[in-house]
Image (cartoon, helix red, strand yellow):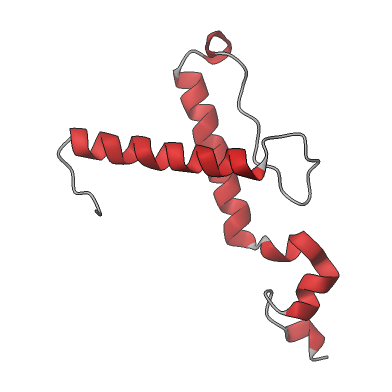
Length: 96
């Protein structure tokens, strides 16, 4: 059938899967990488001494008990700012 071979961003796929259609393999892996980096930062800051452990990024397959999408965007911007600051401090190449 033609429907089986439609691209993931097609209207038919989006209407049948809803929000799940926007989450491809790359997006799922990126969410996992961000969560693992958050956990590594939490552990390097002392674990339980540093406060509450970071929650994974909510996906369409998980309950919405974690951070909101706005919180996720803020975390990503914070991570990018800290990375750029570290690169500048080390005299590295910055894409700006």
